[in-house]
Length: 76
Image 1 (tube, rainbow, N blue to C red):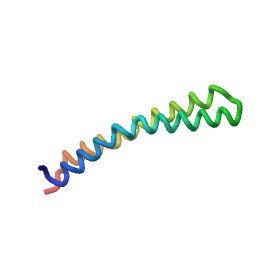
Image 2 (tube, rainbow, N blue to C red):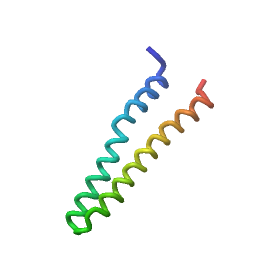
Image 3 (cartoon, rainbow, N blue to C red):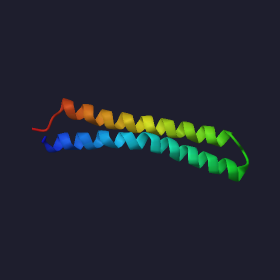
């Protein structure tokens, strides 16, 4: 079955499969609609898509960093 920390670790990693594409899609959607509204195509689409990619990698970094710090200092 596993301990509570193992279950939390699995839950954190399972959300990565949704967080990464969601952040990219969110940035893409914001950029698309801002471009339509401000008639600046394709500049805001590109910028906000890149923000989404950076946000996805940032979430990935945070989850793996938290996991690594917990491995170094396990709760007894």
